[in-house]
Structure formats: C-alpha cells, structure tokens
Length: 135
Image (tube, rainbow, N blue to C red):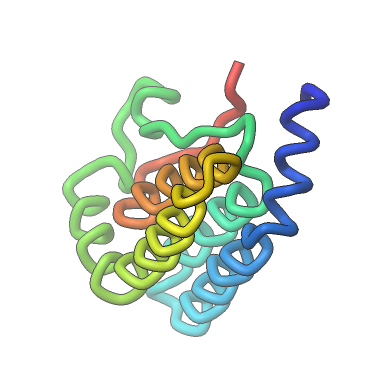
C-alpha cells in the first residue's frame, strides 16, 4: 500500500468511515441472526472491511474474477439483491450518499465523497460482488 493510500485511509477513519464501517457490520450481525441471512451477513462483513479502508480497493463482479457463474451471480443473486435492497441496501446507500454530498461541499473532501459514492453503489447490489485490490 502506498503512503498516500495509507494516509487517506487513516483520514477516512476519522472523517466518518468508522461509522459507516460499523453500520455495515451491524447489518451483518442482524443478518446472521437468521439462518437465511448468513450469505447477506458475510457480504456485509466483507464490504464493511472495505468501508473501513476503501482507498486502494474496488468491487468487481465475482463472475469476472472466477470466470464462472455461481449462486450469487445467477438469477438467485439478483433475487437476493432485491431482498437486500428492501431490507438494508436503501438505508446504507442513503447513509453513504448523505456523507458523500457533505464531503462534496468542500473541495478537500472530494476524494472522500467519491469513496462514499463507490460504497453507495455497492450497497445497492452487493450480492455477487467481491472486493479486490486496485493495481
């Protein structure tokens, strides 16, 4: 990890990233309460880790990484994303969007606003996605 990415990630934690990361992990804990929600909970913890350290990471479709379709990238994954959006996705996305708009007001906060937009888009359809390091 470059020094700039490390510095931006540390500033990110201080400037609201910690709260959104906890929000993702809280959603994950709530998903793990039911047996049906375990796949959603796993996705929440993976994305929550990205919410804590977003600089230098990106989300990609798992089918592009593995080269084959799995349960999360099939039509079941689309159904899961619809259920996810109704229960948690809208609220997490709204939280990221509000924070992004707040950061876009200041010029120095634009990199943080872009990261919140990236996480807001991911919060709408997380099933079938994986987190990889940017080159």
